[in-house]
Length: 204
Image (cartoon, rainbow, N blue to C red):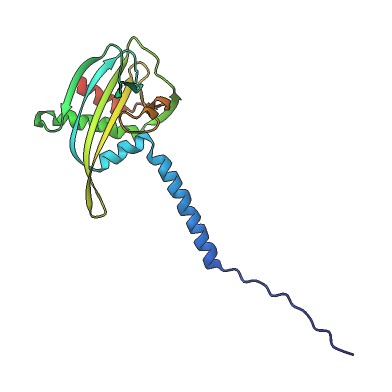
């Protein structure tokens, strides 16, 4: 009687090295996607600007009764900040030694924003009799990318609701006159005690 041959199926060995590499690649892709979206956040750009070597910082603090941050265009010329009842309270310029205390105070205001508690996101800020403090900050920096030195410019606008002690900035950051801003909501933040104290100190 002939012997029957037993047929054994060969078990495929799992290549754990390839699996680990595939998982690592997927994680890198996910992190890159998350980083791209998070980098466009307004607050992320504030953090980025403050981490670099500052070459110039200028701006002002004003009161306004109504915020209009729409980007308009007329005959190819773009403009914005058509707020109502603008009353300029102070200006600052880091190139002036006598302004350095004010510059450092405004930097403190900016540094507080990433640590502040998020509140609501709204399409527009309602007019108020008490109004808003409008804090403008134009920051110029130097940074190193590989072996190259690059210069960057950042333009920030913060709106402080005096009545509710809340800070508003756009959710996303674009170039100063980008009309993409017109579709972006304001993100609210609860002002920290340090923010309020510093602002009061600047304006006293």
